[in-house]
Image 1 (cartoon, one colour):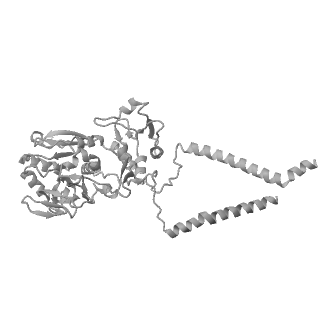
Image 2: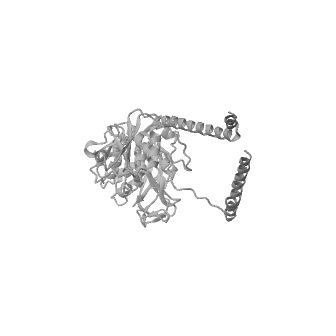
Image 3: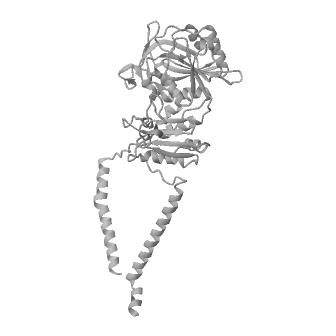
Length: 462
């Protein structure tokens, strides 16, 4: 009995049993916390984003848009089993956790080819890494390459632009369904399958209309005129003016090598827009693309159309551009704003053969108002139709769609910055390296040895 009593009163038993109880309690609490977290994580985002650029954290703009979704929407990730992208998984789950109307579906193109092919559109293919936003009636495909953009600081495509693309796709699906755009014909206009495809992907309907016989119908929200080779008639110009006064919009893409269009150019002049007729050669080597001064990265001016482009340091490309410049800033209830320019190192020859130095305006937008200061239509004019070239579509996509959407209903492009995936560099001076070498090689080992010695001495006296 005395031995048993001595056993239970022994310091080793007391300390040992206390440790065992503590360990058991810790394990029980850990299990309970894991169960609670497992239950809550299905409904809430409980993970903290500790990455430097907050790769997983959604902006307030996205949160507000996603929380207002009131129709069932699938976020579909196309990927091959065994080759999962946890970065995309985590980001998409953060969308899903914001609204019960959203759900995440993952389709394997090898195991579920029929489900994947459903999202394949003409002239495009669905590859692993693609994200699709599908609300049951329409869907928006975001290719894997669109999720990343070029980072001039690192010289690599390590800018993660997924949030911008996904949120833009969600907004695109929720826009009013009756938006219609018409492409004019009958004046030798160019066709642009690239622009038409962009409009289709943005859920904007389009048709081709002969304005010579059908005029400018108010059933369309905007008309697009691409590089006409013949001038518009006086009746058509009058119809254009009437169309704009109804609050509608027009886009005009002109080329330097087109024949003179006196009636159209005169009308644009009345709206404060001058057509130079010259071709611009960029002189800034940092802006020249494809080793030709005719192809360059323009300077993007601040405007609601270009806000997201400017803030996110995105680049555009123009080719064989001529000067299209504002005659005034605001006059006769018409406000003219410059959107794109060449650099001050650019050169151009005017129609008289005289050389001039830039910068030259490449694209402008004029907004008409009435006496009550209400909008009476907007007209966008660019000095090149090559901005719609298939080869440049991916770079110019945000600008093209941004101008159309802003003209129709003043919708601004998403202003969500891409996030860098490259780790930040820690630049250290030589003396800093020596200091930290002493800390890790000498001081830390001494502290660890001292702590171990103190623990050993304490246990000897138990």
